[in-house]
Amino acid sequence: MAKRTGPMKPSEVGARQRESFPPEVFEAFDELIAQNFADGRAKIETPEVSKLIIAKLNGSRRFSSKWLNVEEAYRAAGWKVKYDSPGYNENYEAHFIFSR
Image 1 (cartoon, rainbow, N blue to C red):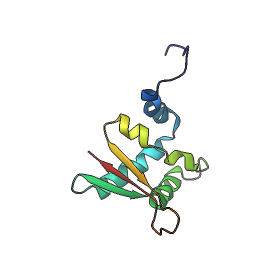
Image 2: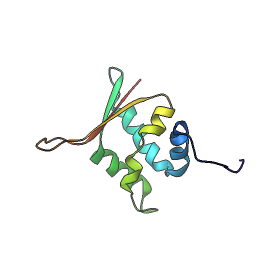
Image 3: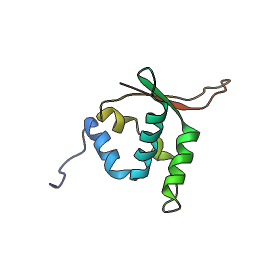
Image 4: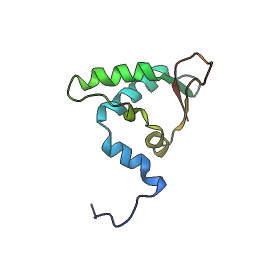
């Protein structure tokens, strides 16, 4: 790999995330996308994916909530990704919607 001579481009963020996040992060998201995929989309709640990532890490690393910022990596792979979290006076789990 050639040495970088300048800043990365916005289009490179997804690839960089795939390189820097532990593989267990993408394993967990992929597993839940496959389990929940119906009618062209999958809804993944953040507590559910966090719990699965922690289980997959099996104590090898400490979980980082930054690893939930996978949107660009999945967009680079061809997915449409929306993240939604409750605002003030709203009561629901933060979640991702993955669609084709």
